[in-house]
Each structure stands twice: as C-alpha cells, then as structure tokens.
Image 1 (cartoon, rainbow, N blue to C red):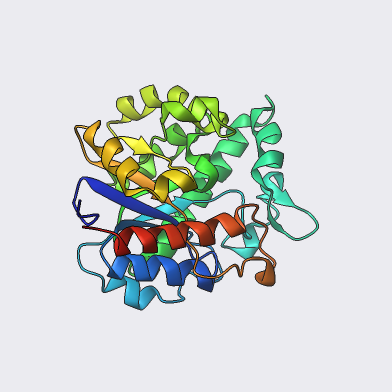
Image 2: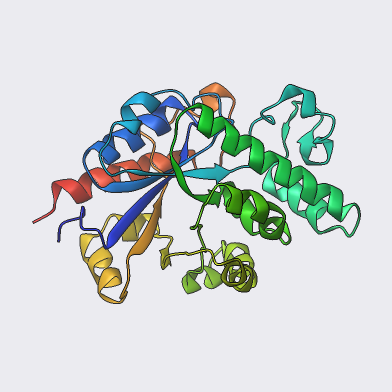
Length: 266
C-alpha cells in the first residue's frame, strides 16, 4: 500500500507549537505522507519553517482554532479575554479549566462572542502569513464546544470555508478521549445544518499508527477518504520552551512510527 494514496489522508495537528513539531511535520509533508496541516496561528513558532511548508505541492492548510494554549493574539484584548485566561501567565487556560467555565450558565453570550473574536483574529493572522486556509478544526477540539460553531458561522461563510473536522471515532467512547466523541456526536447535527463537510475520522493509537497492516485494514473498511490525525515531533523540546503538554513523548513516538511506515512500504 502506498501511504501517499489519496484515501489515506494524514492530517498533522499543532504546527507552530515548537521547532521540533514543525520539523517533523515539514519532513513528513515533503515525503508525501502528510496531506493537510492544521496551524496554531497564535503560536510563537508559527513562522518557523513556514516558507518551506508553503512550497510543498498539493498540501492543504487549516486553522487549528485555539482557546487553550498561548496568549491571545492581541495584547490589548487580554482584559476582554480574561474568562479564558490564567492570571499567572496571561495564557489561555488549559482545557480542564476551560470546560467548567464554558458549561457554567453565566455570561454565555459574552463567552461566545469572545470565542468568535478569537476565531476571526486567528484566521486574520494566517491570512497575513499568506496561508491559504481551506478548512478549520480545533486544538483539543474546542471548535465543538456548544455554541461555538453557530457563533463563528458568519466568519466561516465570509471566508468561504466549507470543511471542518468531526472526530466521531466510535472507539473513542471506550477510551480516555470519550469526551471528544461525545462533543462530536453532539455537534454533528450543527455541522450538517451549517452545510460544513467533514471526512470519516480516525484517531489511531501509537501501536495502530506503527502498523501498516492495521492502517490497511482501517482503509478497507472505509468507503471514503479517511482523515488520520497525527501529532509528530522530531524532538521532545516542548518543555524547554515552557509549553505545557502531557503528550510530549508520544509526539516523538508518532514521528518514529511515521518514519517506519514510510521505510516499510512495499
């Protein structure tokens, strides 16, 4: 099986998180296995290697909408974004702190407006970097939080974005990522109502990603192009930049798995 086959649509998340993350994504994109790259517009390393990435033929780019990592793009908005921010470091709150705030029945319209403003600002940032955005998704899948899709719908329509991610992998219901599956199931009707396309989705474990036969088996069961999500990093460098991430070592393992897949193709 050729992993550059269009039916195996590998999407790499988190471009801009660190030089190590960018290096792995760029290498895999240049080798043809990664077809789509989701970009953290407000990340400090978003420009690191971006010129080379934009030169990769036929690569698609998306906004990796973010409300849980790094500061808001515009310093003057920090006071307005205070519901989402950690007062100790002026960064967005991590997801475990954001969720209780989000589901509280207070100031819902304000929260939705702030999220819509963040989405618009992050799209504008990618436009200034000359990134041709054709889809969007969410860091830690925040785009699926209740109300956000409706709140950002005017901007999506304005920018003629027709595609997003629906991480409805039924296996996730039986894993520690069950909340992702629940949010996806809840959001499916909203996406259909808004006319947004989404692809069949697979969130492989590291062992599945390391197995060419398991990928082949998954593709045989899917009649359409399958979006396979990966988070590779060439180096475990996130901690050295003060970036909180519990999946640091897993990113390096995913990178090695992708290298092995390419090396072991028939």
